[in-house]
Length: 373
Image (cartoon, rainbow, N blue to C red; front, side, top):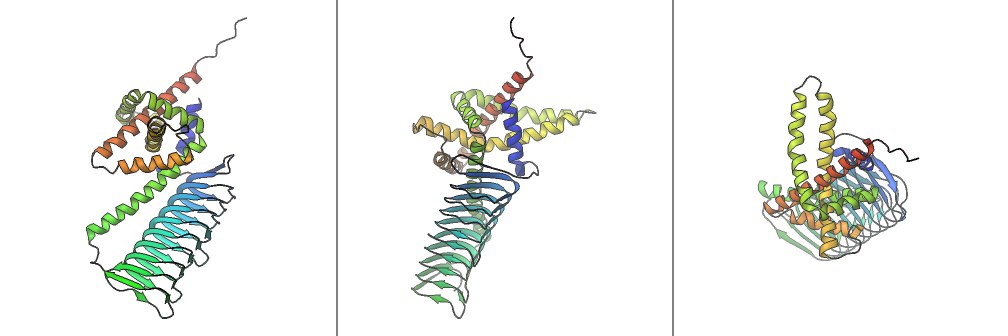
């Protein structure tokens, strides 16, 4: 029954992929806070890291170490002691980030109260900097507005660059754009300014840039999802990934059967008078299984690469998961072969997931054996 509970909880945990649901938040013994759901607010202080993924993500609590978050909208109003890696449609930073910030999304805003201690790497359609950046800022965007302070160099590529009256760049400004920047009276650039004129971005290039940003957002979202799943269900995750690696062929065939036959079964059930009553929950859990397996596939790859290739004693540690997900997504970029590679691991994870669920459901439904007198 434990695997069934695992699937049920995980399905609701990642309900933004299949349905609406509120979020859940929990804390580990190491002081990490993990949160996921359609709408979440992490208000507690984490003595280590905060990892969050969902539709609307608000982090109002502080993290002594790092923050990793992905969502439709991400609001960071709590203090971060170390680095922050955020991805989303809209990203707003309203407090101090002690280390480096890596931000990718559609619209990024660093408010006047926002501070970044060790540099910024940002990519988005619209980027507004009104706070302070302690290191170098490396920015790619369509419209970039600097109306805050950058302590070191600013390296910018944009279609339109605006330096507001409160903009201060204490180092050099190097930027590429189709036209020169609009620099308001009162703006300060202490170092040299190097402008490289570029051709206006064409429609195809805009699409490529968008896909690049979307890929970064997806990678960060996958990292957050993988960490949350493993933190929420460490024993089940280890069992599933071990089963997938040790019985790879069996998992692959089972996953292929599940992926192909369940939709046909659901369709046939919908054609009957009362079959839809069964078809609806089956369809929901099928979608949840497939959605969950997209992340579990990356964990299976991490387990295989970390345990069998690198001989790591803990192949599912947090650093290994982050590295494994990154490599998994990079390999997935290979034309055709990358798609096949990811599909194989997804099917293997789906097969193992289905096997564990069937096994535990069968065990739970078996009649209890009476003790021998």
